[in-house]
Length: 284
Image 1 (cartoon, rainbow, N blue to C red):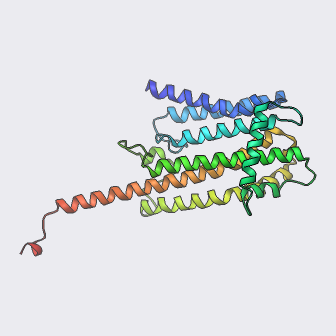
Image 2 (image 1 turned 180 degrees about the vertical axis):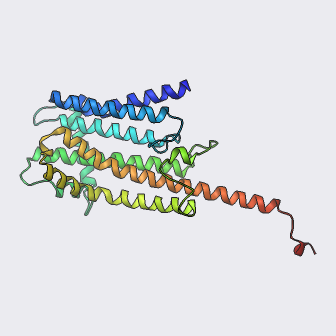
Image 3 (image 1 turned 120 degrees about the vertical axis):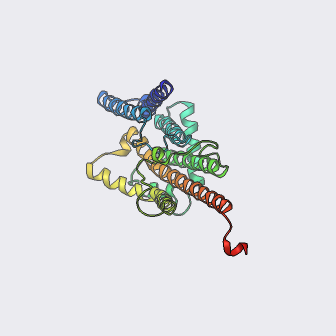
């Protein structure tokens, strides 16, 4: 119990640090903005701590199936950290690290600048008249976010491919790790898991193309100047990366669970068939 409580507190502190990362790295944060970020970070930290300290399922999926959530939170932190460094750069100013990270992001964006790519979708929704330096910053952020997402997906897919997720020798509790999925309703659980896996993968593939349109419409509706706010720009591009990442990882995970249940059923069926008495018709 004590170990579980300590782990929950540690995860809560990690969540607070991750949410506060842009405000700690980007200068010029107003006192009001600092208060809002602090409130959001504390609220999220309390939520994460209560979820991991609870015995029964809550809202966090794959709570007892590491490193699913560890990959996601590490990806979120790396993205926020690197994009905040890029946002720190200014014409003729900024640290060498900020300029190097920005240049690296531009190289990646140029390499990923293919027809109908997410990079082009972001650039297509940038209003005309943006100065070249800001445009290069956006390209650098887009390239970094895309590269981090691709690496995270590759790492998690490799863990599944090597059968290292979920960990061998440990039981997988569907009730704890998929609290919003009811295996007792809606037909065969394997078919439902595979269907949900396919739906999440499809949404994850199309999300990078749809989210920029939704973000532009929402920003215009509430009249938020995203390009004039480094914090809004960092969080906007991070969310644009993180939502597809979460959907793709969830789809891969549910597909893996469906395969595990299917293999378990096959083994039980074979075991029962081997233990069954021979048929009288066959023994004659």
